[in-house]
Image (cartoon, rainbow, N blue to C red; front, side, top):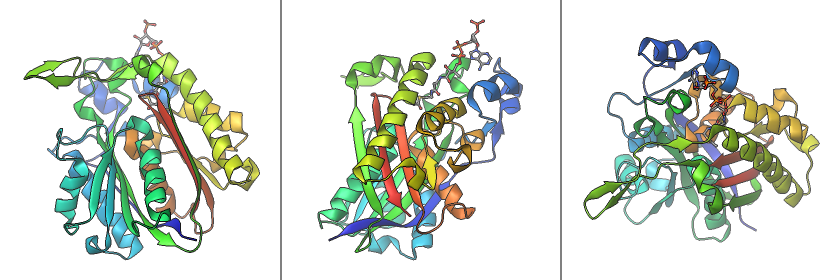
Length: 321
Ligand code: ACO
C-alpha cells in the first residue's frame, strides 16, 4: 500500500508585524481592545513591499524543502491553494514552479477554496500520491488578502493578514494522512464573497471582500465541529486519540467554540491568529509550521487540520505527523 506523509513544513511572513495599534495610527477607527476581544487578533503581516502571493509561496516552499532534505528537482507535483493569485493565469503554481526551478514536466495547479484551500489541496495531494501517479508533492497555502480588503471598512480590514505556509508530502509505506473530508454549500455564497470579475474589458462586481460576520461565525462553528468528528470516525479514532487540533485561524472565539463542542482541551489547540490574523488558505500551514518548529508537534503525533471559508467550503485532514 502507498500512503502519503509530511516530510517537511515551512512558512513565510512578509515584513514586520503590524499591530492593532499600528492600524489605529494609520487612521482606522478601531482599537486594540475591540479587535482583541472579538477576534483574538493582536497583529498581522501585510505584504507592503511589493511581494506577490507567488513570492510568499516560494519562501514557504524553500523552508519546507529544507526541512524535508529535498530540492526543487525532486518535486513532481505542485499545488497552491490561494484566493489571491498573482493574476488570472498562469496559475500561481506555475509561477512558483519557475521561481523555485522545479523542472519542466512536473504538474502544477491552483486550488481555490478560500480559507479551506489548504485542506482541499492537502487532501488532493494525498489522493495523487496514493493512486501512485506522483511521489513528492509541494502543497502550499499562500495569500495576499490585504489586496482585496476594503481598508475603509473597519469591520473586515482588521481581520486579515498575508503569508504562506507549505508542506512537502511524500509517498511512504507508513501512513501519514489517515483520513480527509471535504464539503461545500454554494447556497451560502452570499455571506462571504469578493465578486469582482473581468467581463469583456469591464470590471464587474465588487473589488473588495464582503462578509456577514455573524452568519459566518455560526456556520463555521457548526461545520468545523462536524468535519473533525467525521475524519476521526473515518479512521476509527476519537477525540481522546488526538494530540493536536489546528483549526482555520479566523477568530479565537470560533476556535474556542469549536474545541469546546468537540471536547478538545485548549492546550491541544494550536493558535496563531493572535500573531498572523486570518491569512485564509495560509492560516493552517502557517500554524502547523509554527507548532512543528517550536517543538509542540512531534513525529508520531496525531493532528487534525481543518478549514472553513467562502463558497461556502469546509474540510479536514487527520494525519500522523
Ligand atoms: N473597531 C471598532 N468597532 C467596530 C469595528 C472595529 N474594527 N468593526 C465594527 N465595529 C462596530 C460596528 O460598527 C458596530 O457598532 P454599532 O453597534 O455602533 O453599530 C459594533 O462594532 C458591532 O458590530 P458587529 O458587526 O455586530 O460586531 P460583532 O460583534 O458581530 O463582531 C466580528 C464582528 C468580529 C467580525 C464577528 O462577527 C465575527 O467574529 N465573525 C466571524 C467572522 C470571521 O471571523 N470571519 C473571518 C473570515 S471568514 C473565514 O475565514 C471563515
